[in-house]
Length: 460
Image (tube, rainbow, N blue to C red; front, side, top):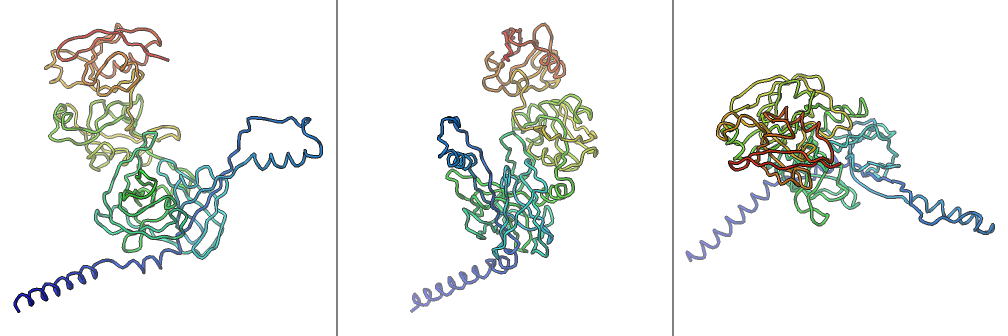
């Protein structure tokens, strides 16, 4: 009897716990019903001209077939490429937000609503670096979505996406926020968006669609997925509203986006670098190079500095610096806190303007010079321990570069180039800029306690 009572009691408790857990799960039905009318499907057409390897002279075609042949050639000359994505209405007078890559290169853009209405859209402005674009359709009194307040999102929150994955109109998927502030450099090494990472099922066609919080506010614009198969594996990335708000405003006002520019090449600080730089922990953005006459150069930032705070915002990883600098308005002055030779130093830098063809605000590419090297200055303590008066240490050697061909390694200390002694990074930069091409040049460096001399050849 007792055993039966225990079993029954356990079943009741399990059922109660299950019902309680179900009751705590959010109900997304109202959110979807209220907001899906403002989510749109975007179809694009790009006319790609086909190259014809063989041309037939008009004289070789009989007159009776000439008109038919020319008509067929005109049809074959342009082959339409169709693509699709998602977007949402920002204002009732027809402004629509989507991704840059959804509409890039499109000759025709058609916006379709859930009620089957279709409109031809014009591009107001687009920004490749943030992967955002603003469209305009000729319509009034449209349903709209509201952007959430920036920086209120937390890891673990429920989020919901609405879009058209694989062309399946107005599909909804849910998940949680996995991480905030993910740095994902582009193919050009640009890194201006602190992405929201989620496990929401995002697939091709969701791009440009909204990511909602439980209040029905847009916290991000779905942009990228990580996948080996082309479909969702639970790693999706959205552009946060903290970035989108400023970009959309500039696109609407100017048709383009102006970004701040610092003019440095940076990298992360690992445990060994932190120890060598007299830092108490790995933190900040290590400055590998400073562009001459850049805002960083004029503001007193030097190679070897480690920026730990910029414009009063902490720089934990090097990827945080481009996010902060890129969002700043040109000509604005920013306080900077950095470590130099183990001591905290405070500077003020006036932000420059990033040109449209400039690859970086603060580049995380390899940042190598003409020799394929990234170098940094040595601290007084390091110079003393090596028993040398000056030099620059190699932080990175690019593959297939002049430095790689000469057998240079990370950690080597360059003492001389040609007939010039190298005491610091300024002297090194000056000598490298003036090196002749296809001419062997002496390079003397220090490795594991001994000096080595070799030649290095700068190729065209």
